[in-house]
Amino acid sequence: MKDNSKPTLQRVLETALYVDDMERSIRFYQDVMRLEPIHHIPRLCAFSVGGNSVLLIFQRNSTLEPFETSGGIIPSHNGYGPLHMAFAITHEDLSAWEKRLMEHGVEILSQVKWPRGGVSLYFHDPDQHVIELATPGLWSIY
Image (tube, rainbow, N blue to C red; front, side, top):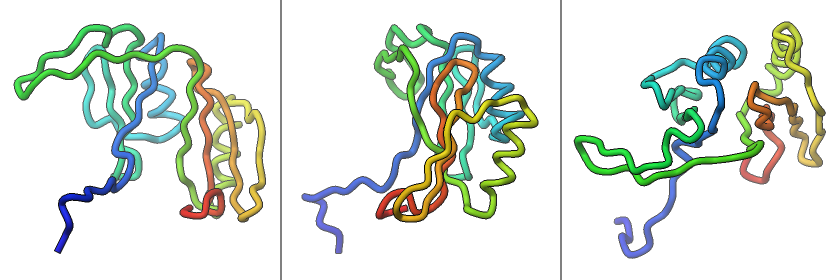
């Protein structure tokens, strides 16, 4: 029986990036990163990541006011400057991702080999956010 007095978090469900050119970013995350859009309105595009989490791309400054939905109000939020996020990949797909990024003209900023055996590739998206592709062996839990 679950102890409801000690609720736990299960995982990060969604993360958000704020972009200056929505269509350019949608093309990047669809064409280069191979993510599937699951919801799109002018101020936001939501992408399925592995079928179990969501990347939200917001038009910068479009969420400065609370947003009313039929189910309630979403508080205002926004972001500035280069943010960071990481996608999980397999060791087997690492070289294919390197090749894919190069084919799309995406410069790999660095590659890090972690003590636990993981490898990370770092690069910029069109808004200069630092995106990481990481294999298992990065963290004690991954």
